[in-house]
Image (cartoon, rainbow, N blue to C red; front, side, top):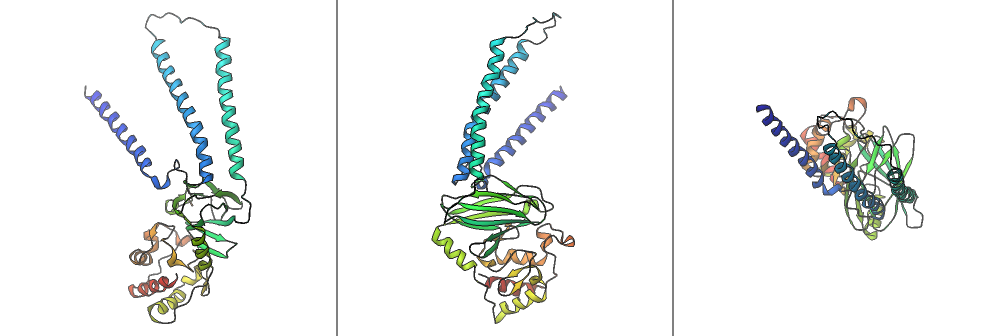
Length: 342
Ligand code: CUA
């Protein structure tokens, strides 16, 4: 009696946890794969629209038949051997030919879509962006604009973007679900994908290949802008940073050098570090540290106080930013300097 009650409670608990997990996945509308916002994502979504109903239909047909057969032909305790059947040509031909025909249609649609979406975009207005995966942040290079930025990729709307994917260390996977499917970022290999956004907006994504300690903290944003806004953004980003000459910001710039920040970070016109994200126009970004923090003074202060505490990293293995043991006063000055990097 007690055991039965426990089994019932356990079944209810399992059902509750399962539905919670499923509902939690639904709630993530920012990265909803079923809400395509560009041509590439729509092509992929169309495949799902065709394949999923077919799969669901057969799931129920097979499931229900299995249950009915289990009930109807169960051992009734009379020990008689079941009736022996030696095949049915029509049935067998049917259940071979029909699935084969369905799979052929799905196969043709899938292969042609895969070929379509893997074709590099061509044309005068196509934007080229190179994504470089790092433990644990994304670098974006715009060879046509001589721009380098991090984590937040800006693109113009209604424009095909050729994305070239490379890795600096281990395997990552770059995925903005509303714009395109994921593509792996593999050391020693160059992959390609095309993305396109219909409307201005921020499209969220993240690394989807386990890449070490802060894999979960390797997020990304694609910020789609009108063509004019994008052109303004790109020309602003191509400028060198102006180095402040007075006040706290100037003292911060001096600290940026003396504390070693400049050994890892590039600030065009001021520092040429090659390890961490390019900070030339840091204050034009919404986020920092793998796009896990909103960029504001409070978060920056916490970050500079002890980076590996805010985001798990392994500075002892040259992975991520070390704790520089900065004083409050030094942090204030560094933030004042970062504020000038618009
Ligand atoms: Cu990069 Cu996971």
